[in-house]
Image (cartoon, rainbow, N blue to C red; front, top):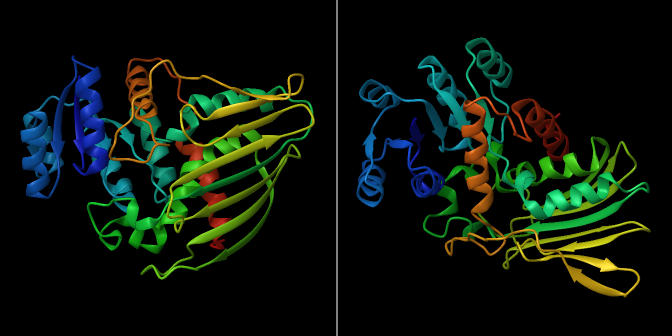
Length: 327
């Protein structure tokens, strides 16, 4: 198989690195409008790169496109890939532009469509999902996710990438990352109460903190705080009922369960090997990015183990629209 990585920024380079290190039978080529990015990728990864998708298609026998550009460009790029009969893997979209057309085109053409949603593939959260699924009582949870916006891409100004745009703002991205696993674990949402504000001096035109209360249809209730002002990157979760009490600090070794009988905390080991990149915060691991690629490749081969689809994302984005007040 031959994969075309479209967009050679940080996410594109991550996907190339994972593909090269783990799939020796897959040829990789790249596309980016920026010459410096093309030159860097050619030198660092020993791949061919092109300025346009059309040139890449003309010179290679491509199987799939991996879309790693800014979210507002995704819909058009996906349609271009489909026009060249390429299966598509796309990073998080944040907006539902042309979703219905994309879903229909995928089905009509018989081309696979895969949407990245890394948190839903975290093993710690899969453990929590199963605990909640087997819990007969209603469950409460509180969750705080925050990271200072200028620290997201320390190599560039935050006004120079997609979080500058109100439609694809930083808090919206956090919700789009976290809500898929929350909805999978606790169920569809029945009621939303929300407070939001801008408390920083960041040069942005949208709220930088959200405090959201969610009531799920199964009766579970959650209190979620999302922000882009926390100077220390944080992901802090507590899930509890009369029969269970779980804590997670967002790291791959940070899941704990309270043992009622011994009255002690027990660490839950969910990973045999942990792959981390020092360029990112400690709560970000490479394992799930690799898992997604494996599942996408399996899907092309006819085995479908994906946990999150474009149809699921339509619902998630509709909840985010309600939280932001865009309904």
